[in-house]
Amino acid sequence: MFAELGYAGASLARIAEHAGISKGVIAYHFAGRDNLVEQLVEHVYAEITELVVPHIEQESTVVGRLRARILGVGAYVRTHRAEMVALAEILNNLRDADGRLRYGNEFNESLYRGMEEMFRAGQESGELRSFDARVMAVTVQAAIDAMVDYAHTYPDHDVDTHAAELADLFEQAVSADRADRADGADGADGADGADGADGTTPQHHGGTP
Image (tube, rainbow, N blue to C red; front, side, top):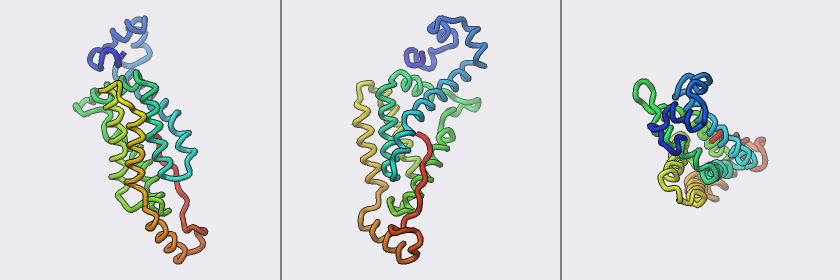
């Protein structure tokens, strides 16, 4: 409904009409339109998580998990156009009592923290170069959100290619070059050989997309 009429046009009455039920039935299950919208957002994010997380968990490297996150979201956008159009309408329009967007940076905080943890683990292991993990996390999420928004504006856009380009871009942006990795491994071995033959520390999985 939000995909067809836009956020402003999707009143409870129009939603009920589209679903073939009375407005009272919707009112019985939801406190109002905002509550219905919040449930829809949670549903879409749960579907994205269900699709993307298994691919992330199959990867043994930070770069692999980052690529899986970006490519997975791209795949969801391609196969769930209506849901993503509805989500974009909601994210760009729903506001709180103070007039601020309901789903802004605070909504993404758990995503930022998860990627920060993942990036820091990769830096500690020597897989990733030195950079500000929070800035990179915010930048990655902003790029993913922009991909989703662009696909909403241009339905014929090749989302798979877009996602692949983003994955390549961020792989180059975060990866330590081979010389840096070798220097880091040599330093770790010299300082303390108890961490293992490659001198790396255990990596941690990042947050959900």
